[in-house]
Length: 63
Image (cartoon, rainbow, N blue to C red; front, side, top):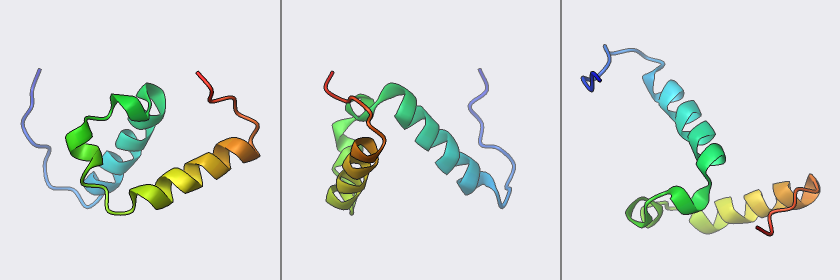
């Protein structure tokens, strides 16, 4: 596998954000390393928003 950085592209950060978001949805919050979660500056706000989205969509997140 080639782990070199991609060529500089103005959309790199957008693509990384989208891929990171989709990966987070797929694997779940608990799969994110604690050392990364500790650096989230607005973690409580994001958790609150996520809970409201889940509740508003009738998603059962009790597992």
